[in-house]
Image (tube, rainbow, N blue to C red; front, side, top):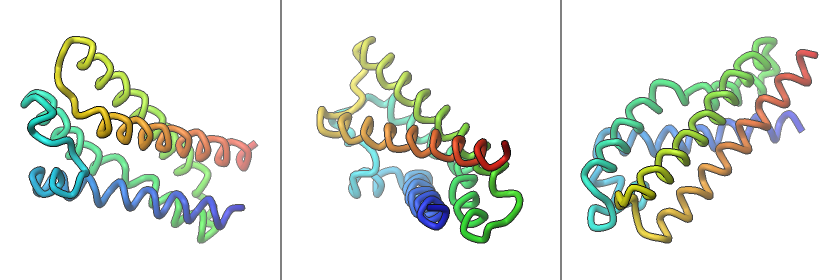
Length: 142
């Protein structure tokens, strides 16, 4: 179970990090790849928020792939990093959902229906992975 958990943290975390790196370096390329919402379905305010989010994510979301590496190595610090990474993922997913729902309610275009479904699905996965990391770390430390 620990090997699978470590691999999931590592792979999912790297995918998120690479996506945010692409978004930071070239938002237009990220849009072409489908990593960001298209211009015709969003407003400039939302695109700027997403770019700023991508930049911040590069600063904080490294913790999940790092936790995955420590889990795979059975390093004694892995439960602590898993708790931190899980908390960041839970916070990020919840905050992003709240942001998009709040902006949408105010009439801000935040993407097409399909883009929004995919966005919320991925955020739900992020939330679940965060809860899983917290649970693993907590159980190991208790």
